[in-house]
Figure 1: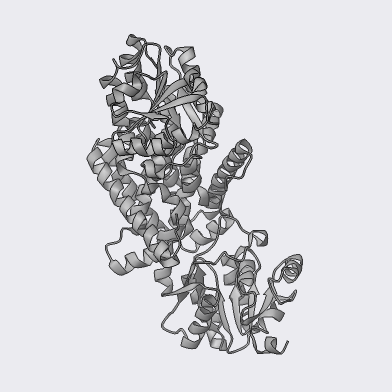
Figure 2: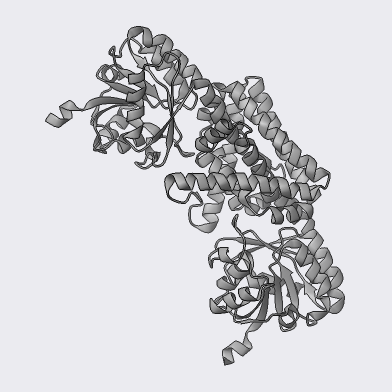
Length: 302
Length: 302
């Protein structure tokens, strides 16, 4: 108990896949874990399963005690809570989030919290599955992950370090980035992929003819399983992400469409030597990415 | 040895990923396994590792002894061997293949072999990985797989059953199909996906700016890993497949482009309720496919 009193209070707001997994990853660590979830039964579940050390029914009661707060909520709620509860955080405390977009969130954080002496630094851990909700949480979700942590012209260095430290203490590597650069980057590395996977699932499986549809279901194997996996993600969540990163997502989709258009033209023209070269360049890039990740994680990716 | 003499002779021509894995899967089964590979050291490896029971350096010597032959070769070699060695098969014997396209191959098989009393029935097992070569072979490659087996107006029923039996004896489910229907189907369930994955790998990782490229490599996670996995497939093999299924591949690409175009327009117009509905339909289809495969395999797909 004495040792506990010296620990910093971290408030985990929202105990879904990312929030509950974060609580699990922090077990035995240097933080006293405060938790809050909209549904009281999830708070109880989190207490019963050593996901948080303390929980309260009112979010205000949790954030008022926090040295550092991590908003593990859907993007619209992150935006809403920053505004709605701005006066509840203690001056000097630090707030971060796990939202998949950063520019709109960091702008709100700086606008509403910093005048009150509360520091806001955005985070985006590159971790997740196509599932959601506390039932899907597991303690190794963040293993080998990286987290983007934002720095702007007005970011407080100590606050940045506090947020970076929260990630590094669960083994997540921190990558510093400007909010706008982050949004353009993840539009390419993630957001566009979800739009493509969704279009793929429809193009492959959505047949008006019932017999043909049955054959398509039967004919799909591991290639379809993997290329389309993220089409099984939450429609609500992906709507919120794309809605809050519209221009960058469109830019990334355009760059993909350009590449695909080129491959289609090559096939139409019967230029198969060219096709083989283009495919080889894609393979070389993807293989070098696999090697890069394997070297970084010191274990094979796939 | 006596029992061995009653076994049918199966000739596995080509001991790469599919051929060698096929030999492994047939271990202890009701066939005497003859093998041939272009490289003699692979024949020896196959003998040493119980992948075949007998191997010869000359392909003619192997197919002359075969009751049933499976051509586990690249598509251009399947086409070449059917023509070149047509006179070497014994009348009454049955020939099949593992090529990813069927119409061009079945046409050649019927044209060159059937006048000599040799039966040709096309096969396409839905199994494989992004790797190739005998080193990548493993005995469970065909587990839970399905194989398309072709039937045309002239297919001999007994020959069809012989080929179907070869697959069912290693636990592969046989799906009967016409060659042209097969090619249009796999264009959608497989070939188009490889073109999309290759375009994705380029769109995500191919940056002229070195710093930006480094950030892209770092920023990619499991979503990219899975959507792009098959971009690491063999460029030569995929050139051969697309080259031999050009029209159907273009048709499948067009149906994907149509779906993607629609999603892009929805995002451009800011119609995010519509986006969420479209994404939900893709998720529902993909989830129902996962459930279908899980029920069929009696184990979870993912």
